[in-house]
Length: 89
Image 1 (cartoon, helix red, strand yellow):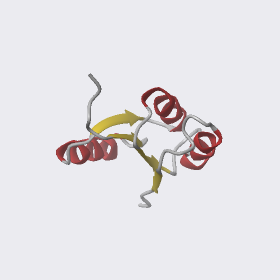
Image 2: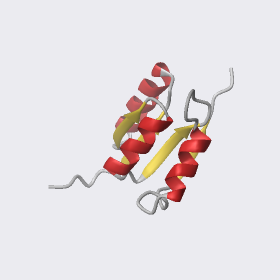
Image 3: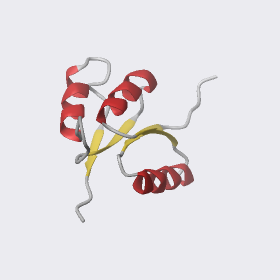
Image 4: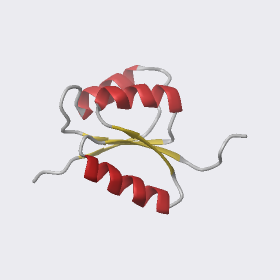
């Protein structure tokens, strides 16, 4: 039986921020899928088909911009809403 909970994919390279987002989204009732970098985020989006993606922009390797371009170019993922996020310290 498929879950009725909304799935959110969190793509974030910082472990503490990833954990914080995981806990907050779970408290709000979302099913949370985590990815540590852009390439993993693309893989998980293709596999899991989340309802929303929260994408960190500044990541090593494939950054959030590149991952978003790839997701937008793929018919399977192009319509998934993506929220861009970044933290400058």
